[in-house]
Length: 265
Image (cartoon, rainbow, N blue to C red; front, side, top):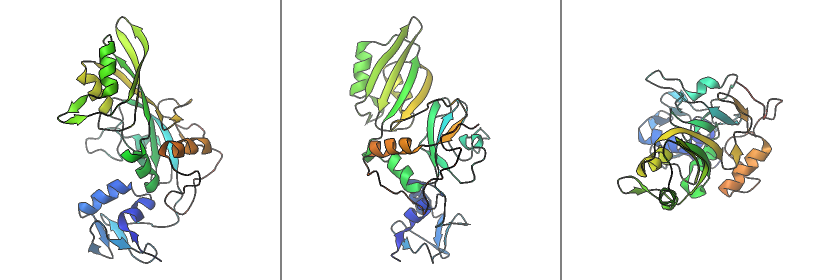
């Protein structure tokens, strides 16, 4: 069997995303047959032993899961939290596979979050070259001017020498003490929407992500989740610009069970 880059083996095992695997290798947490590895090293997943922080990687035979969750406010988008805050994985009751979030939503934000144990899939959704769209419903305290909208759409500086890419911003409703906006962006910088609003002197009261690459919250309520349907997986493939027959990492396709697409708490 041809040897494979170790970060891909780790990602395909469902342990974490490929990007995270690369960071773990750089941090010296990954060993091959007991020896430290560097980026670019390869291994045979059938015969070599790969460990991450002492935990052996199961390279074959995983069941792939693709899940959408309505993340409520007050939860952090991590697997664990040293401060003892509530994490999104606490909402996933009855999930045997070790799934992890694709991207982030900050603690004070809510809405759709994708989770998987398919490292290649997660890497494609997050990679900037794929330009996967994300739509947000944002409530601000102030009246929004046309000049503000134009600045947000053409790009604003959210950090020193960091400009946002062009995006779409529309006014949904206007009331005396609040304005509801809809943002559609094609990148995912840290706390980007909040920083964009701050850049034009808008105060965010509520932020809810409603769509990722054509996958919507649907009828999910805060804290509920569902396996992605075939139609939703195809919408994501279309958004990423990959073939309908694209196979992501691992050795098995997603489970089709009676709960697929159903709601859970």
